[in-house]
Amino acid sequence: MVPAFILAALALLSACETKECHETKPKLAPNQPNGSSALASAMVAMDGQLQMVLEGVMADPEKEWGKYTLPSHNLFALEPTDGSMINGHYMIHAPLYHQAIQQFNQTPSKEHFNAVVSACADCHHGTCPGPLTRIEKRRPKVH
Image 1 (cartoon, rainbow, N blue to C red):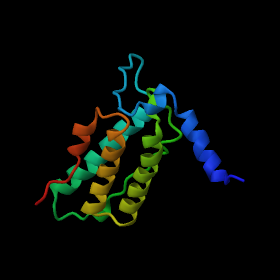
Image 2 (cartoon, rainbow, N blue to C red; image 1 turned 90 degrees about the vertical axis):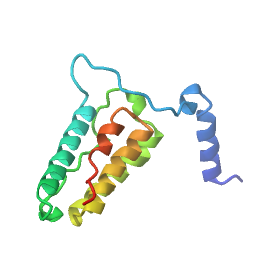
Image 3 (cartoon, one colour; image 1 turned 120 degrees about the vertical axis):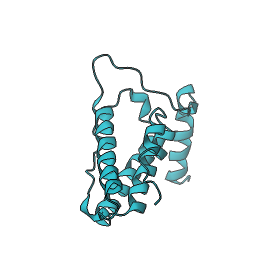
């Protein structure tokens, strides 16, 4: 008798014998003449929130990180620009973003803020690399 986990692994491997499963190169989202998707809009809002916190702390280095919190977005509930961008990489990294937000909100610090920025960058590396330069600009400058 074959254990169930081996059967599940074989089923998964045979399902991935298509070109789509082997295509791991991330792609840029297409331009949207009718506006952004819900997921893209949430990410623009997330970027704005990171920028606001960064500007606040950098403008007054004496200000404590603890005066800030970051809202968390349910990245699985939002419609993407292109459905193919919700791939295995995204499914692994989206919860890590949520964890980083929770960690920052529980114990706000430069290190935890950088963990949020890293979570964004890590996810975008395997899904939609277009915003990577912008994301890296959200890292606090070392004083």
